[in-house]
Image (cartoon, rainbow, N blue to C red; front, side):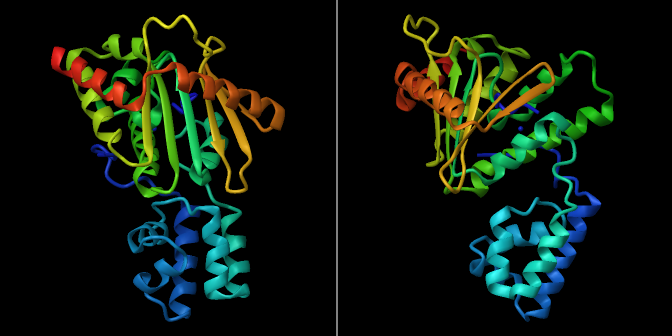
Length: 285
């Protein structure tokens, strides 16, 4: 998204996300406290409203723990355990491979109950299949060294797990049709992209809309934007360009962005019409 381009079928060939020492430490602390309470992962997970597989990833240092996990764990494990987990969380390092200027938005993204994104320059990071990501990074200037390249590909793919791991979060994307017509990376990359958008668009919590090539009434002329609704129903805006970004927390400014996004939703093709467009474009390749 300004698009969050700092990342159903997610994960590509990257395997598990790379863990940091702080993530592994937090995971080990959580496991020790859970063991002390004589709870298995299968018993503990429903008590904190997450899956056992997700708790396992956190304990292995392969997932960044959501903030609400700390509060829910305290309710289950007790106030002393809550204080220990809170202390362990203060040194967490988020998302190896994500650009430093993007990390603040990545933190907001993981805890949002609604995420909205309008993009006019590139497919939103949460919707990019691996071949498209690689096509973008192949064209990046200055070029990335091989290790940076692979880390950033994996980090972007890892972010996409939000779409399936947070089924209660609603995701709305408005994409300029020109991005689909451009064929970034060639016909085969575009074919994979269209298939991926059709597949992700079938998720109940995801809505993808295309802005038509010709739209005389277009409210997106000020550029790409992203919005997140927090658990306490506040809206936070985000914009990025040329390896820099800005988080917008002022309610009036975020409200103006939300108003523009709402108008664009009415100007774009519906989700159903967008699906038909994607299918037509896929058949024409």
